[in-house]
Length: 85
Image (cartoon, rainbow, N blue to C red; front, side, top):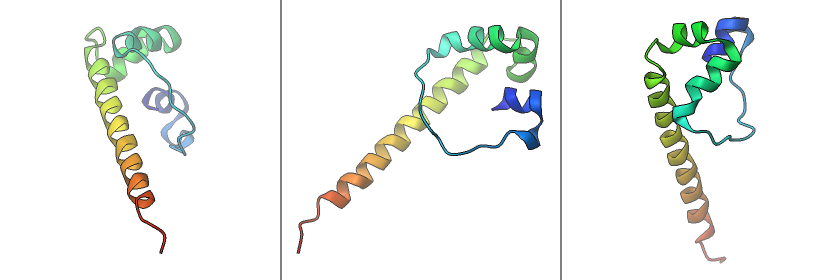
């Protein structure tokens, strides 16, 4: 989102409903984004540290996503535990 907002403008890129998930290797994300959007743009946004900060961000977001999925599943399981009256 940050890269797209830097290209198209903050007002033109809005966060919407999550429509899917993509598995990726956090250590390879810097190279992937650099190849797609250019190394100077990626360095400007995430820092010129060969992807260390970006790797940390990707891993933190993966943990948040896993927790959210687990929380959602736990809520669903609780509602299914009730016996019909």
